[in-house]
Image 1 (cartoon, helix red, strand yellow):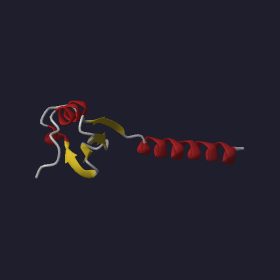
Image 2 (image 1 turned 90 degrees about the horizontal axis):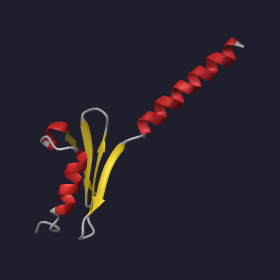
Image 3 (image 1 turned 60 degrees about the horizontal axis):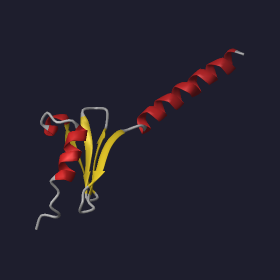
Amino acid sequence: MKKLVLSAVVAAALLTACSKDDEKKCESCTSDLGNKFEICDNGNGTYDATSNGVTQTITEAELEGFTPKQVVELSCQFDTGPNL
């Protein structure tokens, strides 16, 4: 019986740990030009920022005081297309 309870506890802990890792909080939008912008919180002070299919990892300091949602909204609002 003890082995069964211990196995259940270990399994629950592993499932909880895995599901937490898989749950990234992301903010995204699509501009009027059809370009998608997304920022996902990695949970460690860094964010994955994706613009037009290109992803970069940025730090919280690089958000310059803006929330991820504000950065995404501003990106969509001021999207002028690709820089040539």
